Length: 158
Image 1 (cartoon, rainbow, N blue to C red):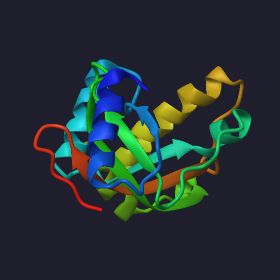
Image 2: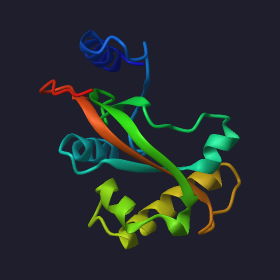
Image 3: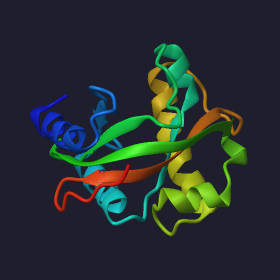
Image 4: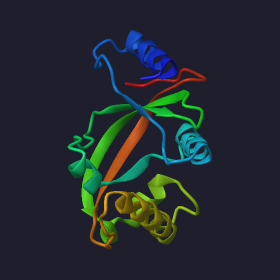
């Protein structure tokens, strides 16, 4: 965890001492621009969900996110901007991701059509790196979250 993330987590732990000693810090997407844009959507309350490729969790032996999990969201400069708490996780086939989930992700025009176009390209690229093929039935981890702490104005909830 970088110093920005460590400081944000320590500040939050001072007012919530019963939370875990540490958590993961990460940015959305693969570019600074995308990370900045999506971090902004998290901060303004538009983005309250994300989707990830279940296959990568399996291949890398990484645990799935779960309700109650804390994460620190980084911007494109890898500065911590917020702490989010996962509220719900569901694994569904790509072609069964709902319009509601697409809307909660907050990207583009917030439609399922847009979500499918963008995520199909994103997941295809991820799968190519591990010699896997994209299909409309790949399992997708749909995660909902809420912001519990923000860097700038130090808003917090439990």
